[in-house]
Length: 177
Image (cartoon, rainbow, N blue to C red; front, side, top):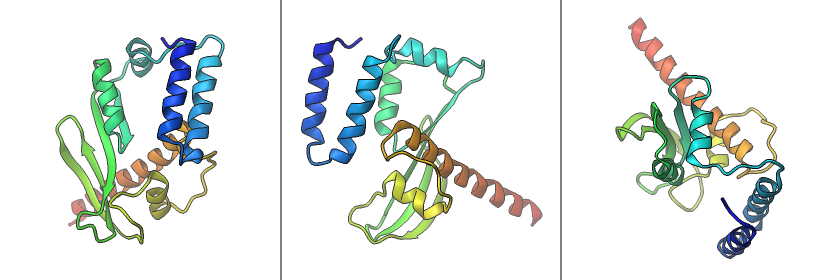
């Protein structure tokens, strides 16, 4: 559990990392303040997370967006009973601004789905969650700001649903042949 000194140190550390990105830093510090100052707040330790994941007596499947850090944290927490961890990523394989959307089973490192999304004029080999979402969904979701946990869940869920619909459509078409 963090004490006030730890929180102050964490906020200064994050301030140094995100000093040139105030649009990312502000919501992050806001989330920390809300979590620490929330009456009855508990730490998100392995017991709390495990209890939440298994509250409905099912084997949870966790979906992440570019979730390398999330996956490392889950592994370090040693939470048992997770059926699968699936990670959604994107990449410009040839570094030519043609991006592909990928769904990978983290447990087996097996690629489940891959689709070329198309050309995007930008520097870098990876699109942000917001950029990818904008390419595949025309719906206006009610979101506060990017990097807000609720927003990230909404956009990740939308992209995951897109992938699942593509997989189901493909399977349906194959069964007709």
